[in-house]
Figure 1 (spheres, rainbow, N blue to C red):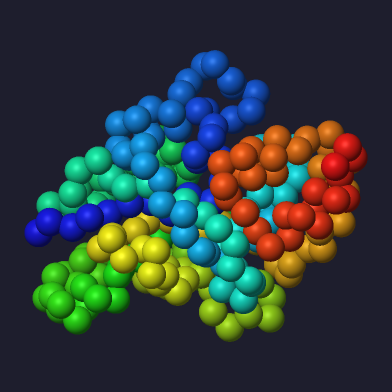
Figure 2: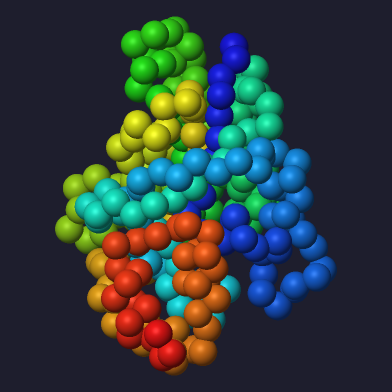
Length: 241
């Protein structure tokens, strides 16, 4: 097995070096994760994303969620430094991502949590070109999520009226494969549970940033080419824009 893999990033994983705002300088988990696992080159990719999760680590402002019913914004893909040569390699990368996200911890040795989960997206061409490899990877990934069947509910990851959450009950991502992803065989990403369930207006998103005096997440995303279709209107509702 030799597969080209990477991570879809739609937020602070690309620009933040630590996990918790109040612990700046004490650890550099995200920086070390990027340096040890990912190439520096970035691939821009259309993905269905929006601001939609009230984040306690972002002063109750809104962070990014995947939403299959939302217009395509723009995320990033960073390639793994080494090809995936076994399923164990893939599992190690999933755990490394979960650690960088603050999901996998000493008290929770899983790639899911109460608020987010690491999901897998497989290039549909792999199913056509090497069905046995596709089936092997899919089955092994589903086996991981089978152990979570009593604590993982994919329906929590969708907006209220949506039919399709961005991750299914087997931990497989349901976002549409894009042509910009074609150099990759497999991709990991971290959907999170939206809060509130349905989309916010640009003014609601901006007002929360004004109220909490915190716009670092929004402005840092834009600076790193992570975009949503609401960005222009959000910016227009912020002071000094």
